[in-house]
Image (cartoon, rainbow, N blue to C red):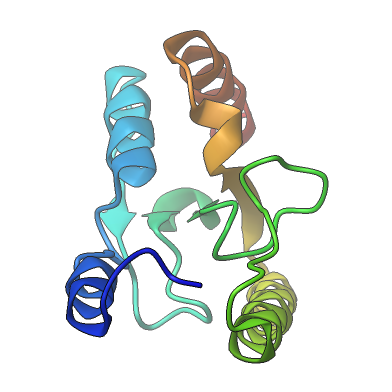
Amino acid sequence: MDIFSKEQRSRVMSRIRSVDTKPEVRLRKALFAHGLRYRKNVRALPGTPDIVFPKHRFAIQVRGCFWHAHEGCGRSSQPSDNAGYWLPKLARNVARDEAADAELRSRGWRLAVVWECEISSNAKLIAVAARLASEIRP
């Protein structure tokens, strides 16, 4: 059973962002600190990658562990309420991600997927940003 009323749940869900999420913003700032300049949410590319480096043909998808069903992650719990809705929805998200990633790669782009849990602490964020900077500019 949901702990919120229908109206409260609607308000909570309406505040969930699809762009400029906290993990995205934190990673962008860390990459900027490495001297990397990027484009955000490029709609012309499959899957509308969150961070794009056109000069290097490199894209980054920052994925929320729950919304994209990160396997083996504690943040990716399966909802018990309304499972008939949530399980197919999360499965569609995963299938859409896989199709968009494959299409992006087939167009000659390199792609990195960064999970929310991979950059949850400052130490992890710094390590991931350094790794990505070396991948972007080999």
